[in-house]
Image (cartoon, one colour):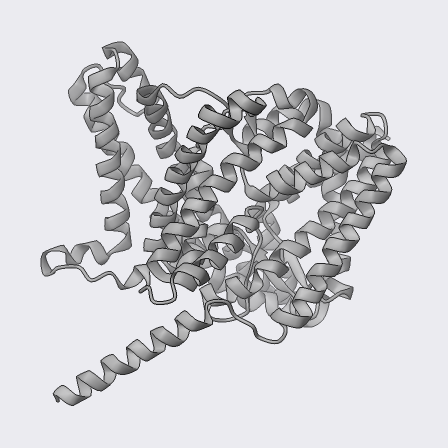
Length: 499
């Protein structure tokens, strides 16, 4: 069996764990299905993979720029607790659950393709690193419930659960995604889907007459702020320098210098300290710009190639892609959502510290900058699509509450890993992992049966939702869309009357 584990481990870690390879393979398969020439197949596959690598390079720059920012905030505020970081908790679990998660990734991917091929939920989940995170999470919570020696049962039940969640969540989010993109060619494949759906629904409720974040009217002297790269970078400069000044006031000199110790030129005085903060803010803006460029390349190569898969391999399927894919549709909203989500995380942190922690022993969940940027940014885009500026703010804020409270709940079903200094940070890991972990405690027989029934009910609900709402063209935020069109018609009529 060791050779089989080694093969599955190679496939999961070296191929399925690298989204760029997965995207490139999918693009190549799609072009082959379209009977394109060999050169076009190779070129299209490479460009799609390179686009995702560019996106990943941008994300790495953003993460590196946010790390000292988060450290700075925690140092000046004195906050202590658990930081939700998917990569960290996955690494901590790898030694004990690595083989099981490898099986889960491969088998669940096959389950997903079969469901996409033969059921109404025609979505192909292509965010490889989130597949690894979900597989690790399920391996942990099912091992805690069933016992670590029941590997075969864990793989069978876990693969069904994971295959189902990979087609169900894109289906539930599809109407909101269609509103964001103004077509139905793309799906969201990111396990913070609950946060995006919630943001879209709240946008519908609070923003019926709210203008888009992208329609901000800048004074003549501030026209440069319409450039999303400039406005994003400028805001981060202001935030970075604000907390840097705070840190210079309240922190000892040696401790303040350590915050930027990993920078290219570690500071030794406060002049270098402030310039290091300024440089990190610029790096953040550069990273966001790289992400947007990578997204454009992916869309240009993957979407046309995916038509081949949709027509030949999985008819009618949509690619479910990582959340940065929505950022270019509303760059201002992504930034507003990020900041609103972070504020929501701070509010939730206060609630836990003052009430839930002392009363119920709930772990103190610190707001991680990375999940708040990506999850909050996505929530802002979805909230803006259905509710304009109000939707972006409210959607981002509530997303921040969700990705703070749910990770705290998830810790209770993770066994000894629940005592670690990290946990999974996105909404779907929180709710799905908690439900699966609680049901698995019913035992190997009872837990397995109940979990399969749970997966069937979730799948059935998604199929009904898809047939009754998605396939009939339902879109959220209809009232606001009609109001926006009316405003455009009035503006057009006024402009014609002035001529």
